[in-house]
Amino acid sequence: MLSFLNTNIIFFSIFIILAYFIWNKWISFHVRTNKNTPPSPQKLPIIGNLHQLGSSPHRTLQALSHKHGPLMLLHLGSVPMLVASSAEAAREIMKTHDLIFANRPKLSIPDTLLYGSKDITFSPYGEYWRQVKSIAIVHLLNSTRVQSFRQIRETEIALTIKMIENRCGSIIDLSEFLVSLTNNIICKVALGRTYSGIKFKGLLRRLMHVLGVFSFGNYIPKLSWIDRLSGLEDQARKVAKDFDDFLEGVVEEHVNNNRGVYDKSYEDQDLVDILLDVQRQNQTGFSLQRDTVKAVILNIFAAGTDTTFTSLEWTISELIRHPREMEKLRQEAIEIAQGRPMILESDLEKMQYLKAVIKESLRLHAPVPLLVPRESTQDVKLMGYDIPAGTQVIINASAIGRDPNLWEEPDAFKPERFLNNTIDYKGLHFELLPFGAGRRGCPGIQFAMVVNELALANVVYKFNLALPNGIKDEDLDMSETNGITVHKKLPLLVMATPRF
Image (cartoon, rainbow, N blue to C red; front, side):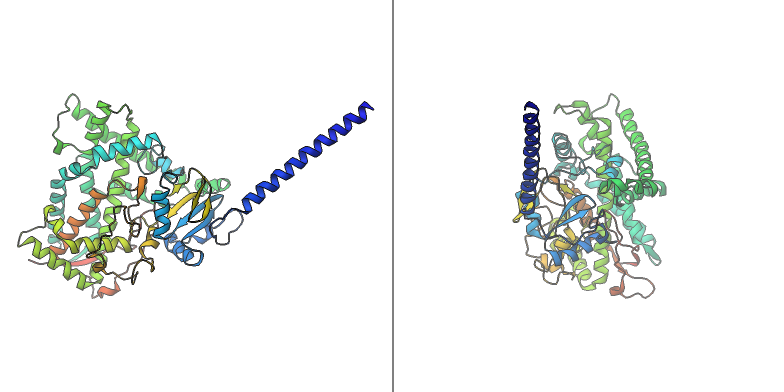
């Protein structure tokens, strides 16, 4: 009898456990299926929507958004990826729910290149990131500090103008001149002197190339062997080592030069000097380690050179294709300069058409068309959709810049649309987001844009530019490369004629 009772108790217990398990599964399924998730394209097993990204993801995702809406959910392997393609969606993510979406996903290649993501751009949201960004804003990229580098900018641009003058009458690779210009300015500002030369420029190109390569391991862990087989992991480690060797030498040189001497004038300090000074004083209680110093310098250096150069290249290319707009900008420069040999930084505030030209170029050619991914830290309701914690988020700045609901003739180059228009690129207007917005917006906007404005104003003021070999202006090839920063696929070759 006792045995019978025990058996019944056992079976009853098993029944209760199974019933609870089935009920719990049913509830979970019911809750899950009642979640209002954003629309999604059809996905494949294992790879999800990876096959739909194509060679130009920002263009492909823009096309998909026309079908599925401005907020859509993709699955890159096992990772849910929310794609925002409208100003309204971007505002919800980067303003209304900015704190929830302030985190960065952990990505293996930036982690390898940037000392475990100890930089500003890729470090996860938290106290470390707040401290590092605060140092950048307060000590490195504030208005007074940016202004202190004025002489460097004006001197380097004058040297570039002189080199172009010496090549007048022959075909000029203007892209190469612009790379050298931005590289030299950033080198002097960040490192104290120029590091030109093929080897150094090649190192920077390798860094940006590896950063832009898709890593299978981040999205399909079982296929991480592809990153090893393709050589991506080895490339990343090699670039990281080469850059670390270079930066270690730079920092050590500064330490030795400044040993016992901390009274450099404000204008004479470069960014390494400033970071080492912050490290020495340790006023905030935040310990600034050597790897953090190198990560921040590498971050500013790579981003400052690459995005500034590509913005200049696209803007000049658009002006060559649109002679009327080129002439209108030149006339503004002539009026402002009043016969002086160069446009100065003090002139830039008066050049409203110049600013309109650059805004229009950034609208059409966002340097980083897919902003650096974010990641949600908690469940959130977004435009009526349920977004779970741990969802990666991409803002398609390129699609927003060409949204026909926001812009008349969205694919046309029309700088006049920004005259008498308050829309700006500083993160307050979500129709124009080349530098992002919110907590994770780019802190170096002011520094980058003064270089852009000054260089563009002087090139247009000093030279007439034409395409070589009788190529018509409108036939200039505007094909794009693929990567984290989108460049012109072909270098900008021109014939330059001095105006005076």
